[in-house]
Amino acid sequence: MGETATLTFGDQTIELPIIVGSEGEQAVDITQLRSTTGLITLDPGYANTGSTKSDITFIDGDKGILRYRGVPIEQLAAQSTFLEVSYLLVEGHLPNAAELAVFESAIQQHTMLHEDMKRFYGAFPKDAHPMAACSASVGALSTFYPDSLDPRDPRQVEVSIQRLLAKMPTLAAYAYKHSIGQPFMYPRNDLSYVGNFMHMMFGNPCEDYEPDPVIEKALDLLLILHADHEQNCSTSCVRLVGSSMVNLFGAIAAGINALWGPLHGGANQAVIEMLAEIRDEGMSARDFVERAKSQDDTSRLMGFGHRVYKNFDPRARIIKTACFEVLESMGVHSKLLEIAVDLEEIALKDPYFVERRLYPNVDFYSGVIYNAIGTPSNMFTALFAMGRLPGWIAQWQELHESPDFKIARPRQIYTGEIERAYVPIEKR
Image (cartoon, rainbow, N blue to C red; front, top):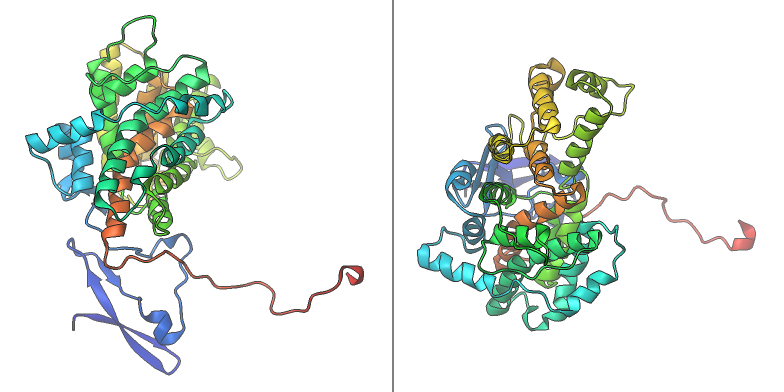
């Protein structure tokens, strides 16, 4: 028997196994706690609770480490492509040239949407948020493709994965086109994954559109950096919903809604809105920092701090470099980028933020890139969802392949009224 932890409760003493991960992480296995003692654990927000054992993503928040399937994010960002990273996450290993070619070809075959989906978009108001449209349309895919809904049929799962990865850029671009009253652009399978998305987002039938290679590379990089992030809110949502045995489309639609929240994927939109507010009010970065520190002011410094990273977010460093490269290539002078750099420099030296370990996160500079290339702020989170999709898929797959699979069902501590009699309405 391996190492254990001892729990004493009343006159009971039980031994709880210690589980050790491949990177030395340790967990107390409480699987038998309730059946043995009648106790449950209480952990609001699940900050100390492990819901699964996973082979997909490793994070060390204190050291600023992020790895997909063991490969450091810095190496993937410098050398890989989003579709190669998608293969790595979904299949568990980096593909050889032949495997990647087959994977890319399979996705290219599924980029178009059923023509009836256009009428589906027509029912949305013009100002519908793209995340609402993406969630609804991803869920609706299950009605168009009833031939691939069984989560335990390997071939059906494979086809659903290909369809989702292929159609997500189309769904997101169509949500944008509908919002501005422009015609939908059919996919172009001669372009790269990101190039095709840019064509559908920014192209129009009146003229040819060719993606800017610098912007294309930057967007591909952003998708890589967002591709997975362990058991965050939306990923945990995909797993929890997926544990009901719902099809992949239904589980991913739930994850999109979770990502939409301003405390999760919506944070990059909040960052750009903050920077625009500083610019429009003519404030200096120092003025805003002081406002954010004041207990009498509701202003918040968005894009700083992270639930997991307590030193620095490795993705933020990569994105900052890419941000400068994109703007330089475009010849764009961005007041928002100037403000962002000033905010970062001030916050990294200010004791208030240093003591609280508030460092720039992945959202801080990503919105500046999206803004510079003409992406409206309400589309930022939809792009995040495109990037996170392969991670959600990999996590959903891992859930269903686990020998410990069961429907998720958290417990609670009831704090309401004790038993009391029903009172007829005329006596109340």
